[in-house]
Length: 395
Image (cartoon, rainbow, N blue to C red):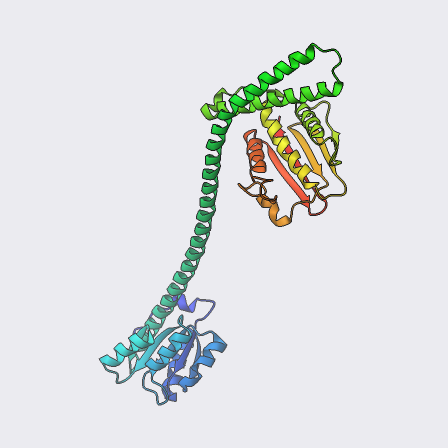
């Protein structure tokens, strides 16, 4: 008899586990002696013990006789298939007909059907193929699992990107709407400026103007200039961003002007104290002044709003620079931001303010403006203690 080559099985450091089921003890022992050279072999004459043996020993392949008094082999194979679908099953029979084979294959999901007397070479070859078939099924199962995970990841990515696209479209629509509003603002703004100039001419003819009125007029004039620059910047950007002229901007000056405006607006009615530590040697930044006005105005407005229910109402503003960066630090003693909202504060439409007090666009616009200057903004916050922002721009 020609010996079959099973070198890959003999050299496998982990032997496959095979369970033999046959009511005839002589056949059972004979098959065991043949197979245990290559495999770890378990035996039983009672098909009702099969499930417990599989549970205890993690069986890879089942070989069962077809004709047994307690249970036919194909019935056992069907039962095992429902309980352990990954186990490869081989049926042995001495007198089965074609219908028995079909039944065994269809109901028991068996891998192969071998007639008795068993040819050892045929059996070993079938076992080898059955174990390879099992490994292939395991590999396919694993690959399907990997694909499912990748599909799930892709679905989540698509949902996130779709959400971002929707946000961008919404922001784009807001931008178009804002551009039309800005265009319509030109007319009333020019009327206000003309009225201001007439009032200024009238005041210049008087000698007893109160100093506070002069301060108020200066703040109004600065506000008109900011509005004109803002409208001009938006209109020019909509037409062609390359036409916007950049100039050296002093962040210290921007911050000082904003503090003056906020102090005038509130007239200490909310008891907010601004603490400033501005670097006297802070370099200028090449950019559009109204952009920086908008950035720091949004951040200071949020800081002021956060102090509404705070006992201590302090806003600290520092400017400083390093070899590569120009930075501004803004800290408040306000209500703080919950940890689960930190990552959302720059999202379109996100706001914790009540309806009518916040649009959810301020921080988004601020971050986009900072990004347009290749800058960064980082935030730290603790509920009940306050929030701090650090904004840095490259030199």
